[in-house]
Amino acid sequence: MSKVIESVVPVIEPIVESENCYLVDVEYVKEGPNWYLRVYADKEKGIDIEDCAKISEKLSEALDQISPDPFPKAYFLEVSSPGAERP
Image 1 (cartoon, one colour):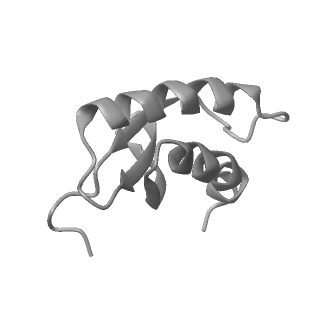
Image 2 (cartoon, rainbow, N blue to C red):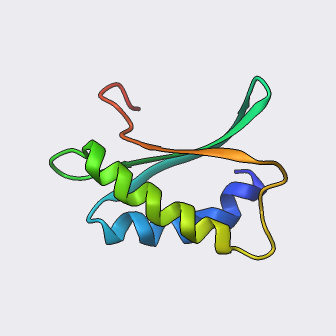
């Protein structure tokens, strides 16, 4: 697990759970010139776009408050379902 992920999971997990969802996975990856923080969440009857939007909004605000900033570069935040083909 990367140092960035170790730093942010304690912030991410309670926010995801506050929306009656559970955290499936977190990725911090570089694709091309961009960095992405991907948060995969789900709930018993499936997560929808509204759940993802609420979580994303709360996470964006909370992640900006972490001090010192664990992100060495600017990144894009993505919140989504792990998908039907998840492991």
